Length: 77
Image (cartoon, rainbow, N blue to C red):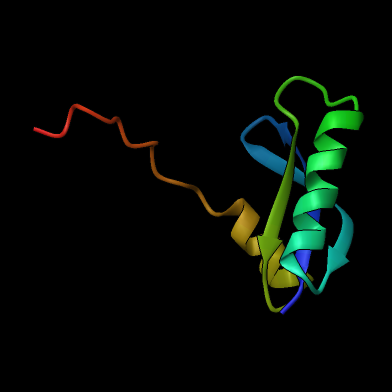
């Protein structure tokens, strides 16, 4: 399965997804995503995301899935 790199732009309650590239090797995808984050002028709220998926449709679906809240460390009572 390939690794896809997307630019994710929040537009109201939805996310606009723009595929930038894809790689077969994680290290190459990771290095490119890090380079893009450093060198691309991202607007407020925009992200560069790497996603591992069977195809572009699955990558889009995974990136649009709502995620749970971040866990709060030290407050697990």
